[in-house]
Structures are given as C-alpha cells and as structure tokens.
Length: 176
View 1 (tube, rainbow, N blue to C red):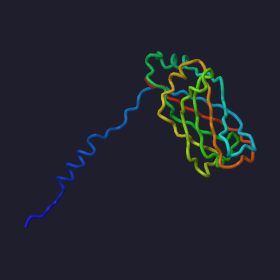
View 2 (spheres, helix red, strand yellow):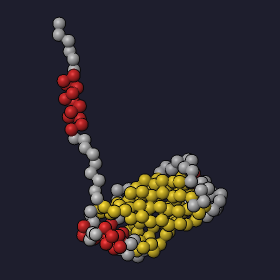
View 3 (cartoon, one colour):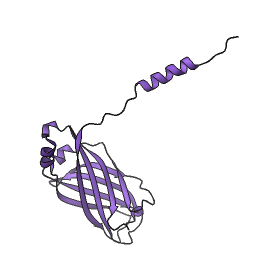
View 4 (cartoon, rainbow, N blue to C red):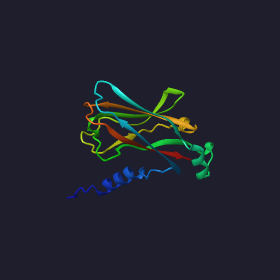
C-alpha cells in the first residue's frame, strides 16, 4: 500500500507563494520636518468641525534641495511620512477628538488643499499624543513653493473642558 505524503506539493506551493515577495524598495530622499504650535480653546463643542489654520509657513524647499545636492527636476514626489498632535505640557486630552484631518494648501488657493494625514476613528484614550495616519498623496506641487499653509480639521466627541496648548509635528519625505 502506498501512502500519500504531500511534501512536494506543499513545497512547490510555498516556493510559488513567496517567490513574488520581496523587500519594499525604499526610495532615496530627504526629510522635510515642520513643527507648529497652536491652542485648542476650552468650550468648543461636537456639533461642528473646527478648523485650525496655520498659515504662511516657510517650506525651506530650495535650502533643503541645496543641502541634498539635488534639483527640483530630480524630486519625483513629496509624500507625507508622519504627523502627530502632541500636548506641549504633557497634559493634553485628545480623547475628545473623534476625527482629525490635516490638509496642506497654498494660501492663495485654500480650496486646492491636499489631505496629508487623517485619523478616524481616534482612540478613546490616546493620552498626550494623537498620531495621524499619513496619506499617499503627493504634495510636491504645494511644497515646492516658498510658503504653504496647514488646515487641521477636528471633529469632537465632547466639549473641550480645558485649553490645550498643542504642537503639530509633520514629517514629509522628498524622494528622488
């Protein structure tokens, strides 16, 4: 009597399954880091979306290109890498935030924004940090200019009880 042993079939399946997998290619580039501080006031409620406009921020794009030894033509994309809201004094309560959207735009064209990061739903107890999820949007057309603006749109679960001094940390990656 012959016994059935599926090792050759299983081995072939595993080879075929993992043959297409390879480590993701990480494009070379440089980081563009921005930090902006603002205050979320006490007493704002959950029935509207609250916009915090951070305007006229220097991109430092040309200086960063020169530092990297690259030209604008060599930059293929500028992609969001990380974004987070952090309480400056360590006592922020981001549990009141239901949804967050970070939009990048030119001040001359506020309707031409590109969403760079978002979070929905947010954790009920995020402590002093609220990490946003970066999108795959290419923001090069905005970031290659001298200045840009940010719109942080927050929809709340509850009314804020205290004023919260907050730092917005944004990291973009210029790839070439």
